[in-house]
Amino acid sequence: MQPEGTAPSAVSFANLWWQGRWLRDATLSIDKAGHCIGLSEERPRGVPCIGGLTLPGIVDAHCHAFQRALGPWTQRAASQRDDFWSWRETMYALAGRLQCDDLEAISARCYLELLRGGYTQVAEFLYLHRLGVARQPNADQAIARAAQLTGIGLTLLPTLYQHADFGGAPPRPGQLPFVRSTARFLEDWQELRNRYPAGSPIGLGIAFHSLRAVDIDVAASVAQSLGDDPLCRCLHVHVAEQPAEVAACVRQHGLPPVALLASRGLLSARWALIHGTHATEAELAQLRASRATLVLCPTTEADLGDGCPAVEAYLAAGGHLAIGSDSNIARSALGELRQLEWSQRLARGRRNVLASAQAPAVADRLYQLAAAGGLHAVGQAAPSGAAAPSGAAAPQRADFVSYDGDAGDWQLQEPDEFLSTLVFDAPAPRAQQVMVAGRWVIRDGVHAHEAAIEARYRETLGRLRTIVREGVHHG
Image (cartoon, rainbow, N blue to C red):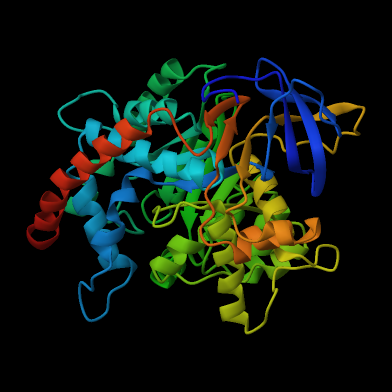
């Protein structure tokens, strides 16, 4: 077996899910840049073989890594009516007390778990920027170090945040660490361009926290000013997550959030809209027509009591879909797909809601949609098509996750049930082999730096717990 950190030129997989079908004993050739350049359905002698089930890695299209620390601290009722807004106060207490080293420690633990959960890339929606006494933006460096340590692919999304609500309401005290003027945001963007230039393993995009936190005219101006910047791969924004947000947007602008973006001509294939929980079917149709991506975070949306959008018609019409771990209350791509379908079942009173006539197996359909949609959300082209066994491979990055025999009873099933077993019948499967851009980052379930990552995370969490609790009650 080749150790973690190596970059093989070829690898065989006992069972490889490639372009929507299972291949037995398939061998991929990989170039030095980490792309798949050849596929054959045979196992040559001398080429290492990975057992179990192997899937292409998925992009986590929406992540706030620092919120990984919040999970157990927000499961006790803050009032008789606990909701998203009360959860937010605990989040503010944590964010306002983080130092750069804290952010790096929490993020490294989060990213390691995401790798084990089937994600090979992450889009970090970062509204922290200056931590501690540093005068220059430094939160991005903590995130970049965490990604480098774990080996996960990173798209960094510096986030503009200016107001507490529509109409330019002044920020609340807990929001002050996130706030930047438009001029400062653009200055910081130039610094990030220097830190992560073309050819860097770290990709860049930008984000607007939400239309309640950034005025629509400011968002339009910033989007236009960076529209021709080749380093700005994508634009992300939270929309329509809560009914109160939608109602406030209608009061201020006469339109709900997605419709407002569409009315200003802002939506395009470069945009990813996060949540859309309370978007109407008409708004989702506008989103689809623009070729933007809808990013759902089903486990976080369930944990926060957000709800779930009606996406059946959106997907049937060809809408782009990605998934994200968001608050990181869970860190499993397969778990997000399961929660997505189960949320739809609970809301619609039917089973297999997101199946289609062409793809009756829900797990297969959702995995294929999320794999392609995640790439779209971060400005990367999805593979152009399946490679013939003797032909050139699709231009696909060599990102793969492999699950072994402990991941459910897949060995008792036929191949057309493998994904159904992983998504719906396997208790929290963990990837045992993970390859990112052609390099092994987890081998036989082990990451080279996991002991140090775990120790540092435990120390950080122990120190922050008391501070955050005091902040919630006295901040």
